[in-house]
Length: 120
Image (tube, rainbow, N blue to C red):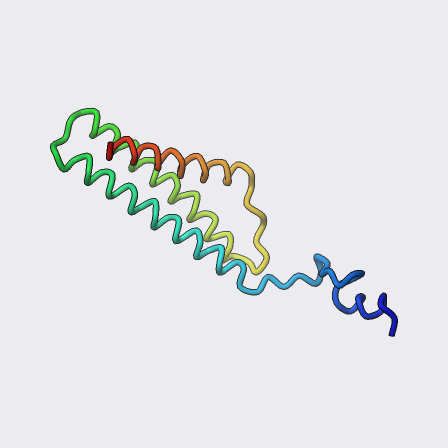
């Protein structure tokens, strides 16, 4: 058997897998769990920021910042839940769209900035 024939059974030339040979394995499950972990981390950040801001008394500015922080958390939660549902729906989910990725990043960064502003 020549090198070309040996590589053909392994997904093509040079042993690289082709799109048809792709086996997602546990990748969608790992991605789903990563979305869950990120959502949990955002939840903890939002709760701790709100707790720290309201601990010494609530001023109008801290109440507004807490409301913004909670709104950002809910927005990220919605983006994450949509992706988790898409991952669970099929064995080969569609790639994350640029719009969803941008929304997730903006929510996460804004939540972190808001939480940091509440704590400081």
